[in-house]
Structures are given as C-alpha cells and as structure tokens.
Image (cartoon, rainbow, N blue to C red):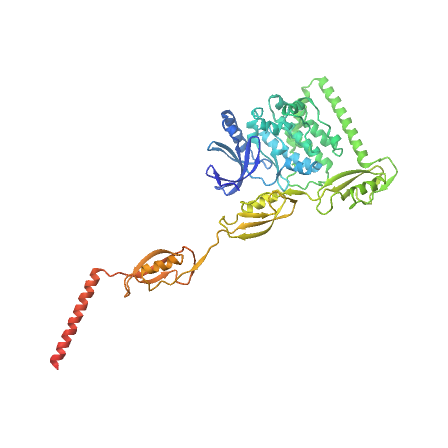
Amino acid sequence: MMSKQILAERYELIERIGDGGMASVYRAHDQLLDRYVAVKILHPQFANDEEFIVRFKKEAQGAAKLSHTNIVNIYDVGEWDKQYFIVMEYVEGETLKNKIQREGKLSIADVLDISGQIVEALEHAHTHNLIHCDIKPHNILIKPNGQVKVADFGIARAASSATMTYSGNVVGSVHYISPEQAQGNAITPKSDIYSLGVVIYEMLTGEVPFKGENVVSIALKHLQEIPVPIHELRPDVPPIVEAIVLKAMEKDPQKRFSSTQMILEIHKAQKMLFPDGEERNDPYATRVIPRNQITEAMNTDKNITSKKPIHSIMKSKKFIMLLVFILLLGFFTGAFLSFGKFWSNTEVVVPNVVGQSVEQAKTIITSKNLRVQVTEVYNSDIAKGYVVSQTPNAGTKVKEERQITLYVSKGAETTSVPDVTGFTKEDAERQLQKAGLKIGNIVAVASDKPAGVVLSQDPIPGMQIEKGNAVNLTISKGEEVKTVSVPDVTGNTLNTAKIILEKAGFTIGSISEQESDKAPGTVLGQSPRSGEKLKEKSVVNLIIAKSKSKKEAVEKTNNNTSSNNVKKGNTQEKKTKD
C-alpha cells in the first residue's frame, strides 16, 4: 500500500495501475467531487522538455473538449510540484492487449464490434480536428459490459514528434505506426486508420503483422513489406473482413478509408455475417450511419476517383480483381478444409469423443475419414489432455474429410496471488478480482494498524493457484480498547481523589466548587458516576466543597456572638423572676 499522497491538494493517489513509455497511471480519489479517477503523471524526462510541455498542454486541453461514449473523458490537466498530470475518467475493465493475450484470436463478432467502437471514437475526434497518433491495443480499454473506451488522445498527439527521441515510446508503438509516421512525414486522420488496421489484424490472428529485431527493422517493414495474408493464419476469417484490413493498411494514405467510410464497411460486414443480429447483443454495437453521411462519403470517393488518371484507374481495377480472386480462392480453400469434400456423396456420422484423451479422440476421428484440429482451452472440471467439447457435435452427419475441432482441456487456469497486505479490504478485493480471484474468509483482529487494513493473507503472495479460488484475509479492527470501572471518590479530599483516579487509569477533568457544610475541598460529586465502564485515560470531572471566604467567616462569628448575648440576657431575666 503506497503512503498517502495528495496531488494538487485534491487527488489522493491510491495505487499505481499502469506504466508506459510516457507516464505512470494511478487510481486516485477526487476529494472535491468524491469520485474515483485515473491520474496520468508524465515521466520526469518530459518535464524538462519545455517544447514538449507546451505541446502536451495544448493537445490535452483540446482532447478534453471531446465528449463521446467511446472516448475516455479528460477532466483536468495541470502541473504540481514539477509533475505534469492529466486527470481522466477511471475505467473498470482491461486493455484490448490483455484480452488478446488472454484469448488469442478473438471471434469475428467481437472483432467487428470492438473495431466499430474504436472507429466511432476516431470519427468523433477527426471531426474535431484531433488525430490520436498512437492507436494500439494498450490504449483501448474494454469495460465488463463490452463498451470500448479509447484513451490517451491528448498525450499521444503531444508525443508524436517526441517518439523518435524517447526510445521507450517507440518500442511500445512501432508495431502499429503508419508508413508516413515511420518516414517522419505529415500525419493525417488516415494515419489512425492504418494503426487501427494493424490492431484488427492482431485481433484476428493473435499477432502483429510485422516483427523484427529492432525498432528500425520493424519500421522499414511498414514501409516496404506486405503482411502475411490473414486467411493463411486463420482460414475462417471471411473475405469481407480481410478486405477491410487490407484497405485500412494501404501504404498510400489516399487509398485508405476515412473514419466514416470505415464505419460503413464494418457495419456492412456485420449485417452480411450476422443478418439476424446474433452474437451482437452489445448495447454499444456500432451505430447505423445517417443517410446524409453515407451520401457524403460516397461523393468523397467519387471526387477522389475522378482526379485519378485513366491508367491508374485501370491498374486499380486489375488489382482489385486480382485481390478478389485471391480472396475467393482462399475462401473456397477454407471451405474445403472446414467442410470436407462438399461434392462427395459419402457422409460420415461424427463420433462422440468428449471425455476421451486427445490421442484416443484423434484415432477415433481419423478412422472415420475425418480430419482433426485441436484447440486448447482452460477448464477446471476436465483433466488436462482430455476433450472438453467438439464441433460439429456427435451424431451430426458431415461430408468425408470434414474438419472436426476438438477443444482439449489444458487444466485449470492459474494465476499468481497478488500481495494485498497493507490494502484496505475494498482495494484488496479489487486487486484480487483483477487476478481472477475472490475474497474468502475474513477474520478481524485487534492491532495498531487502522481498522479495515489487511494484515495477512492465505495463500501467501506469489503462490500460483487456480483462477476463481478464494484468498482468506486477516484484517485489523483497530487497537483493542480496555475499559475500567470508575472508582467512587466522593467524601475524599481532592488530593486523595486525584491519587485514586490516576491509579485506576483515569485523568482529572474539570473541578467545580459548591457550597456545603462539608470541609472545604471534600469531593461532593463526580461525573461519570462510580461503577461506569470507561476507556483508560478517560476524564472524570469532580465537584468539591467550597472554601469559606474571610467575609463569610466574620459574618458567622458576629452571628455567633449575637446569638450568645441573646442567650445570656434570657438567662439573667429568668434569674430575676425567680
């Protein structure tokens, strides 16, 4: 748990949740508006670059004007104690990079939905003359409900001319930069479209299109090479989806989509592949483009086309025809591989191999003149190496040579137990949830730590356990309070009462006087009363008999003298009568 740190006398930094080449990100509490926010603090090397700081402030303030459901809101930009920071909307969830690393190749429906939301955000920014310049899965946040949030609009643009200076940022972004960025040429909104094309490629295949030994070699590949066709890495990708990626990743910016055109193409693919809306129940699915925007986009295409020479148009048509032929060839090849010899009259009943070992299952399926594809999945109920499920299902009649996909268990998914000691119970629960774990039994014990702070945990930090398991916590309930019975000190002198109370563990509070026939200084009353249970060192207030003043003493003496004289006169008068 980090020591309490307040930024700009307002934002309490709770925990560090991320680090990048440009900045560190913290989850923080906005004490003024009582809400959780994300605070991005620039690394110190940027604080010494005056030109960068000026650009950073300008771009961040521009990004703060954006308001869109798919863009992380920026609330504040400032500087405090030589630390430059941005305060943003705090988004619960994970980055797209984490999702790709966890799932590998994403489903076609997810790819189109996520891509559609990203380009919606880009279109909004582009219409406000703001270019992101660093679209990559690390900057795409996905909430648990599927809503996509694009982050870092301000810092990315401000950093665009600094990327070649600070190598940490280049390493993080070079896999996604456009050819014009790699060359140092002018950046346009279509630079973002290229980067998005790379992101879609990675979502579909599980890997980036260009790899290399260093930053320079990767940048050169963006300029000179064509990536491995998606259908070679993943035959089930529909041609219409692959065509979207190819156009987005054109080397020439003029040949790429605009953001509006790309929304239209993604929407067209969704309607074609999922005509009844299956697998698209997400409330944040891409919107239908208004007719006027579609017309405007089509007119833009016509204007661009009309300016091209005739021979360029012919070349483009030949290229498109060649591309269509290649995609169709890939499609039919994939169809053969997936559905077998569709011209054959021989049909095979798919055997049931669920629960069999993968080797036994392969033997059974190949003996039926069928082919096998194995996909490993995490499963805590089925032993490692055994079939969890199969596609097509057992009993289905298929053509011979049909590919049967076996989903084989690789055991329960494990995770490293995070160290949550020193966290509050609420923050500890969040950390465990991020690791796929939950809170188990909670035991509260007295300690010198603040109430609610985690003192220990079981299992211990760093241990590998199955996801979904519980971690037991021991938390502090604060210091143990000892109570003491208040002694009765009435009737004692003040000094004696003090000694008795202090010995019992109490302190003397206020002392007030009251007239009484008791000796001056005698304790007449106490508060709290005797017998009450109080914490040690609690205060006891006393009331004591009032000391007599000299005037009171003279008056009492005179009264006594007068009384004695009256008594003597009465005695003499009685004697005379007798």
